[in-house]
Image (cartoon, rainbow, N blue to C red; front, side, top):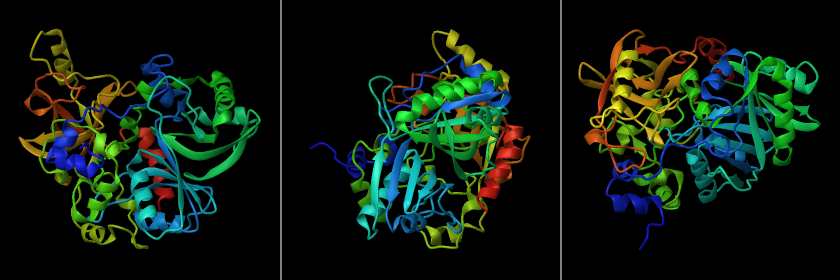
Length: 464
């Protein structure tokens, strides 16, 4: 009998780690959008030097939550405060499990009275929908699933673009034909582009100012064309899928926390609700950090830098557990700048016939849905790396990491372990290789100085 649920798969594998380590899924893909419009190096540079257009229309799941109990459902699951949350606002929405470990994070848009939209990886959507459908909430759900392929007709409910960079607001001013309205961070307004009404969210990526723009799918192409035409004199570049997935290295957002749902009797019914083809069931776990206990991969809000948005002004799933954690020592999110000599030495092994290091792809070196590499100091594991890649802006191979607090001071040298135990796994993205130690310097997060000031300040203000 074939497995029908995530719980069936776990039981058959004997252990959630076995299931995920040997998943045949590769990294989280950014489909439909071409890998490069020009070249990923110049596309990366454009978001710091001129202006870019990100096309986010395909890789994220949208779920609309509507009904009289929609706000209550979200408040009952989110660690965020909902005081002052009203239509035309958005926030980073973070639910945790009963023990206080993160299930995921998405952007939550308050579109209209009793109407919300969750945008991001589907681990949060699934948890919200499960609770809404199995408990007494007067809500309904409409899902618009992410696109998985690069060919064939694709129709989604809305398009979603971001215009970012030092010249973003000049581009926006030209395309809307007037001075852009002042919008506070994570607030929205409505403007016209190419004669079409569009919603605009004040947002930023890699620390640069800009807007996230969305509207009905049938308006996607005229709006995109108008933005690119308006941005020509300001150096705008369309960003392809290769560069897009690397912008987080400079901004410091960790895209891929392990959904903390694979253990616990309280969550068994949820695992039985999740189908065998769900994100949580097919995601792949990769990297040099290895434990047979899946809970060692779970992350707290503080691990991910979300400590400031934990608010105990409402009841929510996991509140009691977080109240016990709040005054304890927490690991700290950092950027690690990998040693150029060690990285070059690892890459040079590609020119041997054997004993090669794990291949570094550029600009994102991520090869699993859930990347977890271990970080050492004096031979002791002191944390994990969660996203690795190259920044042309910084001329560095960077990785986002979570370290024990006593090892998190900038300037400290640590060791990043690249490659999997035993030389590989059954994942199709993993060739046989030799595990390699690479020196790294603990650095600030966000790594980009611009991101540490403008974007970080806006984020803190929006989440007070």
